[in-house]
Length: 250
Length: 182
Image 1 (cartoon, rainbow over the protein chains, first blue to last red):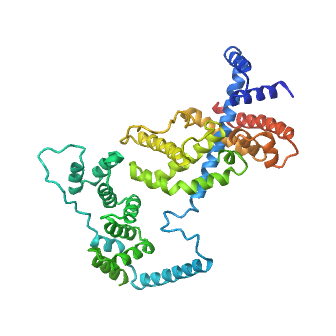
Image 2 (cartoon, rainbow over the protein chains, first blue to last red):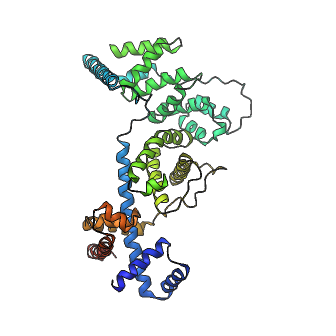
Image 3 (cartoon, rainbow over the protein chains, first blue to last red):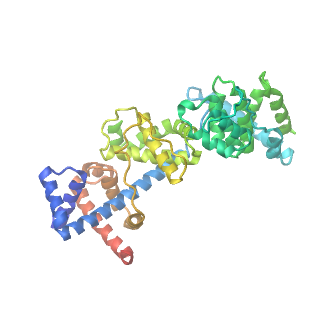
């Protein structure tokens, strides 16, 4: 083994922190007194940092490739179902897709944006308390005032600044509405999806807005089941859902 | 888990961790911070890499908190880093946050990063098996014995000699290709 290889081994052990105290101190002394040795170490650092940099990027790319195989926010786990039932659902989904496609093509071009525009109205917040003359700048009341005035970007920023303890179903619902109103459908979908699955007074509303978000994204496969669910419900959203479904089927 | 991540099955183990906590993290990040789904996704992917590095570099030997708490702790700080960069509103660190002193690798400055990119290109020119040997040893912290098993070499001595020669070759390529810039 030549001198240079020994030096590389020494650097490996030094950077791994496995040299004993005396040897480690000796390396540090040489680094500060021996210019050639220090230059060799600098070169070694650059080489190994470059290798780590390359390894890190490669791993990150691999992690990103895993993401493409993940189902985003599945409604339920089908792992326990038999292969037959899975095929049945698959066949049903394909049939649904074909029928839906036929409907879409038969109507030449269904304009989802128009349907959403005709049916979307941001949630109207009705304050529980009478507004006083003095309103705390960071209070929910003030945030909802911005929301009522259509200041959705400001509303988003203010709600996101709140501590977890200050957040509520209502503030989340308002936040989702503000996201939807500003065209950030993915963000809105996440929050609506959560509330829709809760026992909340905003659950039906969330399903309604969720369906409209999916329509805005032209994702019929997700919008239609939500609308059908609402149509069957005994909520104020049932006639609205029925109307949208009829428009979609025209 | 730490041992499995350090072992040959590290990829499978990491992949399971990724799949298990990914959706929950995205929901949490978008709900609590002013970030988009895409930003949250990027942050979580970086978090997984940092989680892996902290384990293989021995920065964490025992995860005293749950894996989820640890991951979310890393992720939270990455989001705050992102928000700081975007000059957005930054919440204060909360009591009970996990100690992050050991979490991050040092971000290189722009000049040094340029050299790292050049070194990455040199490594690509070097090609396999050298590239794999060097990455297994210096990035994944595999021992000579483990590398000999993974890459099917006769023994650790063979790998050790190859590693040295590969490093010299990499140095040569770097000097030849980027000499004018350095």
